[in-house]
Image 1 (cartoon, rainbow, N blue to C red):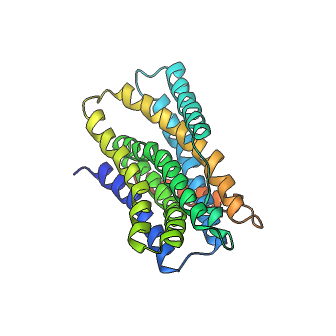
Image 2 (cartoon, one colour):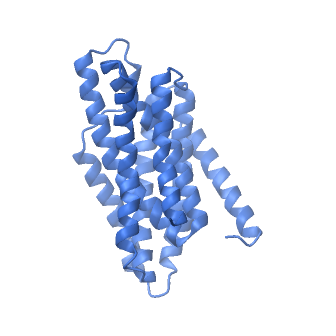
Length: 255
């Protein structure tokens, strides 16, 4: 099994960590959840804008029109998908005494929405790691970090509505498997399209998806979960940590 595919499996599997927290009653504080979402957004923004997009544009044979065009395709494609999806956020977990019917509806909406969001993330993790393993590890880390509260978001309402830990973990796992499916399909399809220009074009589109995900989903969600703290702290910390790690790797000739 290829390393990029393994990274995708691990990132998607992090959803189960959140699911376990949701059924074991050890839910992290809102502050920790919000910080982790901001941290993941910071990692994604720095890697997308400072590493992935420049690498795609500097690929031999890649024109600026195609490179920036694919970046915009990723941005607009994400926003189009996001607007078409039903929205129900982890903030629903903080309701005092939600009704079982509302909980079931919330769980289904969250599972559907998170699954559709996770699918392109699986593609992004695989494509990035295939082109640059170092950057792929950073994307996998960011995806794994924000998959934990997503798993919690699905498992919590299901467990409260049904009282079944198995069902809670199962439905949370479905959303994580959507990400793994994205990586597996990318592995199967892209194996026959190894052109550097094709890979660079896909990477540019993935960079657009990651930027849109960070700005439109992760940062507002962090603020929604913990309105008393600024999500920018997590974003800046994520950027600083990833930038420092990339600098160390490149200084030692690894990047």
